[in-house]
Image 1: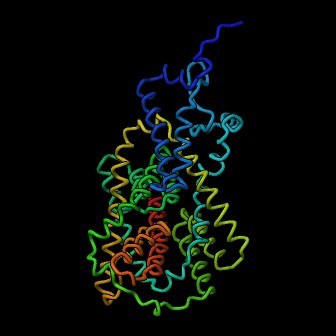
Image 2: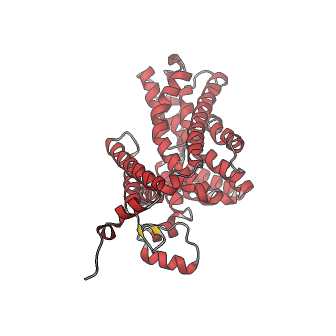
Image 3: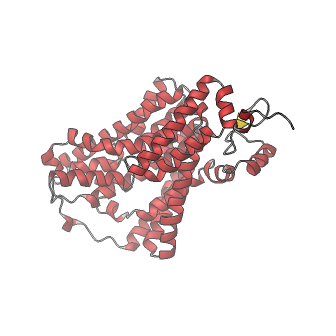
Length: 401
């Protein structure tokens, strides 16, 4: 009977012991970080829909490293680098998450599926009740996606990577994923992880930004719900069809995003319950689950050791902070020149993650005045933010791809 060493059986430990000490330490840190993400997701401190599968994937992939040959190590989860057809076929037969990565993640399909689901949850009637004011707020809330670009360039990033990083300021993680896949494929994993991690933190921090920049008197401004016009389904569908077609004509590279979002909107307004339930349930939450899981298993030790990751952490929070400031300034601008009957707290909802920032705006308004109802206008600004962010993404990708 051949001699069997204990470490031959427990290869995860063997690769930890025999590997580069820096890599081994990074693996341990990421395993513990994965544990923390799962805990904070279950507790509700961070977004559970993303953080639970992502944290679990991080812990598993950094623990499950084995010897693939006498000289190389790896995992049986995903090989994101493989591109040769023969190697890809081998990977598809060996790595259990490779089919999901290859056929839905690396081509941006998973992002468009999430956009379809978001579309079914978005009532664009809120945008149509006050389109000019909503778009002013949304454009101002792109401050982070615009200003972070030159900051990243000044820090040494090439234009394409700087643009992908700047999109974190859109607060729309599927769009960040889509843009980074097109512009900075080597960095799309840390960029997207930074986006999702910071979104969970930013929504906890945005209320403090609102209170710092907007006096309580203005946060409590009541808006008259009787002034909301009745927007028909026909008007909503017409707007969705025309807007999607026009934006796709202007920015073809972002057409999958426009089509996915507005298709979800049209399905919502069509009233076909089976489609609405399918897109807003299994498609949206299934895609979100696998997005989190795939991000987790892609976050190996070698990823975090890239020196660019520290800069990404700085630039990501900078982008979200600037976007929040820009949105609030947009709200104050509309208040100042729009008859002073506009609650400037709506500005934070121009940072486009639906419906979280709109809920932040409503919560802060109610805290200042229990009779203040601003959610319809806040939702309109959030929908506008989705559109303006997709336009910015289209411009970046068109110019820099």
